Every structure is written in C-alpha cells, then in structure tokens.
Length: 457
Image (cartoon, rainbow, N blue to C red; front, side, top):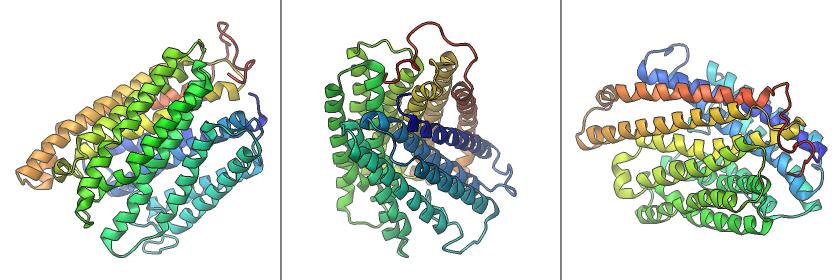
C-alpha cells in the first residue's frame, strides 16, 4: 500500500460486505415468499422485505463506490486523502442513517410523518431525515475527494470518477421533490433512479474498471483513457434521453415513446464497449498479475453487464413491446442481471483487488474467490432465464389473454421455485466471497511477486 489513507477503504468495504449479506439474505427470503406467499406475512410483510432488499442493495453499492474512490484517488492523484477524519465521519453518518431506515421500516415508526416516517416512493422510501443525512455525507465526501484531486495529479480516471460522483449527489436532490400529481412525481422520480443506474453510475463503473485494467494488465494509460472517453460519451448520449423509456405510460407526451425507444436502444452500446474494453485490455496486456480473481471479476463485470443491462434491457425497451411487458417478471429478470453484472461485479472486483494490498499480503483465497464468482454468476444467470420465461408466460396470460393477476401468479409457481433455487446458489456464493476476502489464510503464497512489496501494481 503506497498511501496510508487508502486504509479508509477497508472500513467502507467491511460495512459494504455486511450490508451485502443482509441484501442477499432478504432476497432469498423474498424468493421463498413467492413460493409460499403467506410465509412470515404477519411478521415481515413482503413490501417491508422488498424495501429492505432494495435499500440495502443501493447503500452497499454506494459504500463500495465510496471505498473504491478512497482507494484509487490517492494513487491516481499521488497524494493522501485530504481529511481522513471527515471520511470516517461520513461513514458514521451513513451507518446511522442505515440503522434508522431499518428500524423505521421494520416497526413502521412515525407512519405518515414526512420528516420521520417512511415515504411511499420505490427506492426512495427513506425518511426525510435520512435523506438529509445522505446529502450531508455526500457533501463531506465530495469535498474530501475533490480537494484531494484538485491538489494532486489529474487523470482521466479521476476526472470521470468525480463527474459520476458529483452527478450522483446532485441528482439525489430530486428525491426531496414529491409533487402531488402522480405523473409529475414519476417524471422526476426517474431523474434519480434512471439517471443514477443508467447514467452517472455507468461513469463510476467505467472509471473503476479502467483503474483495474490499468493495474491488472499493464496496458499504457493513454490506451485506457481513450477507451474510457468513448465509453463515457456513449453512456451519456444514450442514457440521458433514454430516460424516456420510463415515460411511455405515465401520462407524459407521446413523443417520449419514440425518443425513449430510439435512445434507450442505443444504451446497449456503452455496455458492449465496456465488455470489449475489458477483453482488449487483457489481450493487449503484458503483465501477468498474480491477482487472477480480480481479473476474473473484472471480465465478468464486462460480460454480465452487457447481457443484463444491454441485451435484457433492449428486449423490452421498445414501446411496442413494453406496452405488453411493462411491470412483468421480464422487468425483474433485467433488473437482477443488470444490477449484478454492472455494479455488484465491479464492486466485488475492486474489493478483490484492493483487500490483499490493504492487508499487506499477497492475493489470498483466490480459488475460493473465483469459485464464488462462478457460483454467484451461474445462480444469477439461471435466475434471469427463469424470470424471463416466467415474464413471457405472464405477458401472454395476463396482458394478451386477460387472465386475472393472481390466477396468473398461480401458473408461475414452478418458475418461482426454480428462482428460489438459483437464489440459494447466489447466497452461498456471496457468503463464500465474503469469507474469501475478509478472512485471509495464514500461509503466504510463495509464487509470484508480492503485492505488498509492489504497492503501485
């Protein structure tokens, strides 16, 4: 480890892994509720479980992004983080807010209270005081990393990363705007949800992936930066107006149907570029890096994000198709593989790469780590295929044949049972990953150069 303040990332990654455990565990519980709908219905209603599942996903991914920034910015800027104390204050605020959210959701505290109670907006259910805390934490973070970057070396990786992080924070401010008109509410709601995951998060993902390719392959920085600029340009060009694919049926003008169809169809391009980027960098690379697990996660990120966010997104993004498939299990299939491929994998890649260096060790538990990749990824792909078939059947029975929603759900039982089985594989893979990165083996690998001895690698 070259810079002492990179240790900040260790705390963020640790908390992220704890929330990752919570997220996948609740996801498995929800999978079983689809099979047995009355399971825990009086103790943990499905809507509460879903809020905990989605909110813990978002928070742990954000913690992973913050940890990645605190790890890579010192190396890219060639200076220590501006204020380590502020970084830990930021983490404490986020942990406090997360605990507040969990307690509020589980016990339904302060129902109907705008400031203290939960709000009925998907993904943005957090009480207002928690949202305010998130803004404070984001401002602390942006001040800290921006000051570090401004005083140090500027690179394309840090520039794109900061652009994504600033965009993430500014777009979250729309979470405070909750108009009474439902169509207007949804229009601005997507400014947070869509422009995060299909806009600024793609910039963060691309910059982290570029950093990993730089370190793992040894390709010249100039080559990496050229690819990075192309990816970012296509992501912003397609992603911003691609928001229109959410506006088809919420009461907005009809021109959004063609605007959304055209630009959201183009959203497959940056994900194809990221997949190509990862493989071309490995092909061009001249470095035999000892951390094979981090390389596997990086390549997996490129491939699975292309299929999950790109191909499965394209499957139902045209308004003529979306008219029938909107809100079915096809949406769930796309959402699961897209989040996993794009953002879960890139976070697990940077954690796999950074943890041995933060601990001053050679790469460890690599066989277990790579086994966790194949177990988790196979489970997620099978889940996606299962939900796709379930969604196709649901679309035909419900939207074409006109069957009652609950009667259709009875017909999907077999698919939900298979989805639960794939969820078991994902949870086992996640637990195996957490064990592999959090509990290093006692013995030191003899072969290959030591990462502790070569911190810049």
